[in-house]
Length: 187
Image: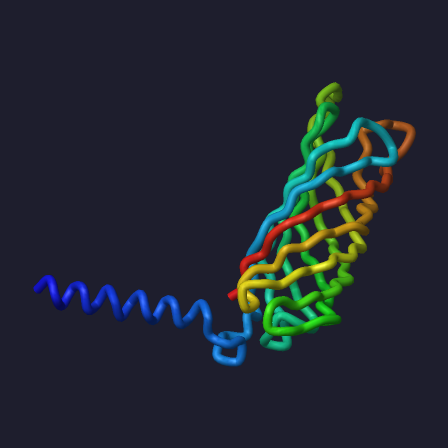
């Protein structure tokens, strides 16, 4: 009985090790990914620098980690003056600029449209509903045979429009810059 268990454990370990060191042609194409990111958020209209966290799940139309993709985003922004949540749909493309057996380098232009709410701490009106448009550009460093993507978003701007409780105007608009970095797991 012990010998059978040890043999099964040895075979499992061998299979697991082989899957980790196998060449990329033997692996799945990794068209799906799930990940998270965090960074800084600077609202041009008001307020101090806020923190931003983002969760994402996406899929590439091409069947591998390059080409056009569609992504669902859940974004939270927190700071001393307000908290904001946005759910969005992002469309973009991954352009491979370097590929060897150790890593891949991808450039990712994209655009997101989202709906959310912003709640100011010193405001008695409650949360404001908002529409967000976000053009962005990421740099992705893909390692571990395509399983992990480390990314940096140096260019991203939120253009927001929301209903305003001020009787003098019906809506209000503002813009913000964000700098994010994150990690995606591709499968």
